[in-house]
Length: 307
Length: 178
Image 1: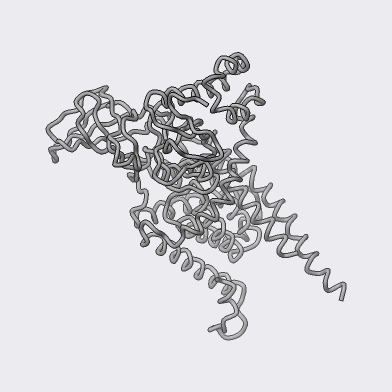
Image 2 (image 1 turned 180 degrees about the horizontal axis):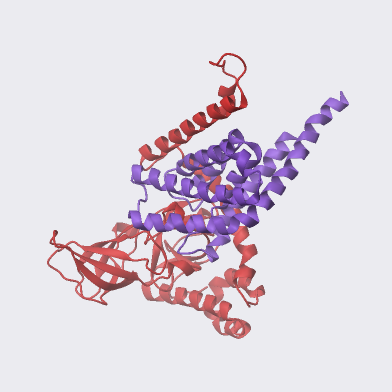
């Protein structure tokens, strides 16, 4: 853009100095950035930038996965790395091979932790009856972007689509907002844009959980109950309420526990602060809830019938 | 020739963006990681001037906006980094004199860039957090950048310097042939 306009006849007399050129480039680039912002912000659901996003995602996503794989040995301190990749491949046979795997990697606490997560995931599959595709978190959006998103290493080729529920063995993680062939972007429930329909475990009252935007140890959700007369009690369990056809959240997934109840004097409604079960700073293995008949390049964990 | 240099620069930008979200998430402070792309843009602007800084800032910012897992309105980082690249290029005469000054420029640029990004978010109502939380995040990211700048500034200056003669040689070569 800048280069094209650089050949335009100059309004200044004489050839432009490098200072003038720089100023002009700067002005044009600011305009270009503002144009991009306007295009993307005004479009709503179908942004004209989505195709560009997809193309960038197809290139950068695999690069992120590859970098994450390359760096895993350094982050798994003291781990016996050779089994990590194998574990991922073997995920479908995991239930039957648990004993073998336990024996094989009993020496490594990190792998044990991962096995426990995978184990928990298969248990979740058995408990909830949902079919899942297991994936690993490869990248996390920086906090200075003020949004809480992660990239996972499963995409449309594994049957992952937009608006699918993402969870791990502890509870609800988020939902898929964008998927490319080999990667997907997950919006965490602690993001300030995230709204989840929740239900109190004891009296089945429904409400909406909003993220507070931070994923550190203080990452909390606020629960706004539809019925203002109900007062949630401390330590009450909150599960997903579930939407029609499970889009974007399937029902019955544990979210967290009520930590405190704040009543605002001006409004009659009460806000409950919910502490999520999931530790968002240490996300690794997650499961994406997919339809039972999903076919893709990675095995689908299905309740009752481990392959 | 020039394309090769551009490819190397693009690879450098890509590396910075990917490392920011993949590698540094393990050492993130409350989710805040060093702004590697921003530091690269600032150092490039100090080395090559405001025009180059603004152009590289636009490219790096757009990549930050579009590469997964970004989920904000695209163009926000591009705008912030164009301004950062241009302003850093304006003070290059002072910043090139010593690494310490360059480090301070990185710190100031980090503050300006992150604040500008936060401001555009507030204007657009896109992922806005309470002001005190935003301020804490901005301060943390500035501290991160100041921490890494003494290591990265000389390294990046060296890499950018190594890229430059390659281009000049390549430009001169056809002349020699003819």
